[in-house]
Structures are given as C-alpha cells and as structure tokens.
Image (cartoon, rainbow, N blue to C red; front, side):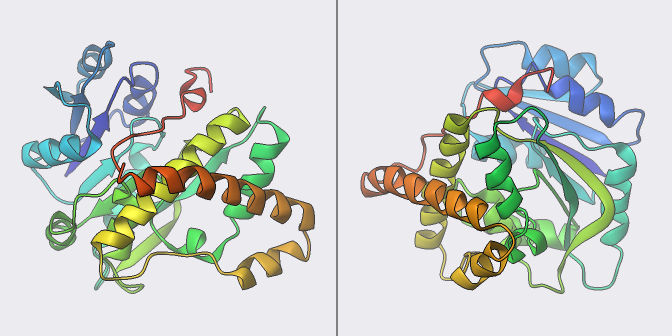
Amino acid sequence: MSIVIPAHNEAAVVGRLLSALQPSEFDIVVVANGCTDSTAAVAASHGARVIETPVPSKREALRLGDQAAVGFPRLYVDADVVIGADDVRLLCDALSTGGVLASAPERDLALADRPLGVRWYYSVWSRLPEVASQLFGRGVIAVSEEGNKRIMELPQVMADDLAASMAFSATERAVVRGARVVIQTPRTVDDLLRRRIRAVTSVAEYEQSSSGSSARTGLGDLARIAVLRPLQVVWFMTVAVLARRAGRKMIAAGDYSTWLRDESSRNPQA
C-alpha cells in the first residue's frame, strides 16, 4: 500500500509523522511542494521517497504523489498530523469490509495549552453530527482502488477532504473506531480565525463546482449542544460570523488559491 504526504515547508513536523509510521511495510511518498526549508531532506532521512516540485500547491502535490504511488489501499495524509502504523493498518482493514471504499480515523484534538477561545470552539465543533460522521477534518483518508478512481474524478478544489468525503455515501465510508490521528489545533484565536476563513472560502468553491450538497451545520444541531454549553455555542457562532464576513471578500474576488496557513500549530514542540 502507499501513503502520499503533500508537504509545503513542513520540515518542523514531517519527521514526527514519518517516525510514527515506522517501522512499516508502507510505500511512503512525500511531495515537497514549493518548499524553501529542509522538508525534502528531513523526509528522505526518514526513508520516504521524495518528490520535489517548485509549485506551492497541495492540489498539484496530491496529483504528483498519486502518480508516483505504487499500491493500494492508498492513504493521503497531511504532514502536520500524527498517525501510527497500527492505525494505518486498521484503516486498510476497514476497506476490506463489503462496500467500504474510503475510511478515516477518529480525531484526537490537541488542546493542551490552547486559549479558552480555541478550546470552546473545538468543544462545539467536535460535537456536530456532520463533523463526527464525515471523513473531512481528519488529515487522513484511506481509499481502495475503486475509491481512488472516484476521488480522482472530482473537481480540483481547496476543500479536497470535504470533496472526498462527500463523494461517498454513508455506507461507502467509515470512521474506524480504534484508529486515531492526532490533530494539532491553533495556538491562538487569530490562527483559529485564519483556519475558519479558509474553510469558508474552500466550502464556497466546492459548492460552486459541485452539483451536490456539502456538510452544513444546522441550527438544530447547535441548539442541542447549547442546552449544556450555551456560552460555547455563542462563541462558536461568533467565530463563524467573523470568518464568513472575512471570507466573503475572497469569494467575491474569486480568490480560491490563497491558503491562509496556521503556523502556530506547527510548533515542533506541540
């Protein structure tokens, strides 16, 4: 099986991921795209096959990595998350279950030392039904050969994980209990907003390019969470409104290429 890891200036964290995947039998391809740091050298030192491109584009990196990958199942993994070899094997095992074409792990959100605003936001976000059941927002997706063909036919959009998740029905996708991925959350509220603005613009791009629906949060979902966490929901909605206002300018300009990156979560000590 193959693991494709797109990496743009991820020298501080890609070694952490590759160490967690070793020792393993996997074919690991790191696509260092538009890097001005030592991402390629760090990845090579951990035994990964490395492809370098001067184009700073996750979309292009995924395409190049997919062309270079040799086996199935195939995983696409963000360089800033951490998943272990045993968790990868569980994801692959799930694809042998009848009808399952795509799988993803459960999330472990790193929230230690984060400000209250970040912790409150993710307390609500992680309880949303669509967030719990869909494959997006995990930094990892595994697909069978048939599943790979389906996602390769998708439009190239910034919200690649959302598009991939929505490409599969509820019976064709699985969140695998027992498989875990560690996701670093923003260390500042400003970086949280940067992430959410990117989410607003990327969802808008996906909805414009797709005839299908996206995973939207309903007011009823928030109302149910607000029964026990009213202040957290108010804060969650405040962040959503601020992000939507800022994202509206980018959407009006047709800017779906600016990647508002959260650097705080890439602290190597995180």
